[in-house]
Image (cartoon, rainbow, N blue to C red; front, side):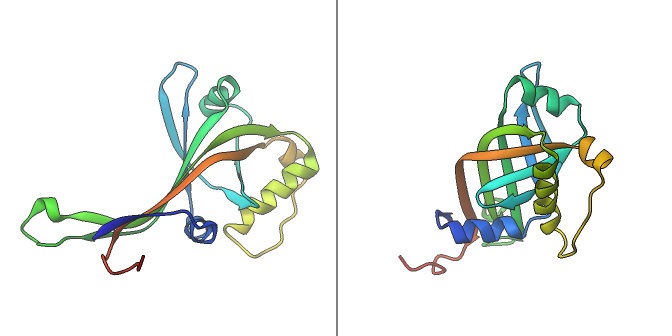
Length: 160
């Protein structure tokens, strides 16, 4: 089994589309790493997340707006020999996206971001009342670097 790096945008977006959550990692206001699972939306190369208006991760991003998002799908335990521990590994596909966060304040842009988030989970149309939109923190993540790997692919899975 091999590890393949994928650079094709369509392949990367397919992996992202299969995910229910991403993990958002930041450096908190005390200089400590902090990672939380979050719902997300993705549209035209931009990620959207939402949260409460304040909290540890918001304070961290107000001090340092750099973020790393990770996505993972298709986890499956595989091995070459059942009695050889070193032959065990996970088959999976993962995406790592690095970028910067800006917080959206315009109500119409916040509604559009919420639509992008909800499209990840449902084909339904949603309405958002003003108090709810005003009380949610919308994160726009502009990607500066993105990578994708496929772990545990069969050797003959890709012809070069």
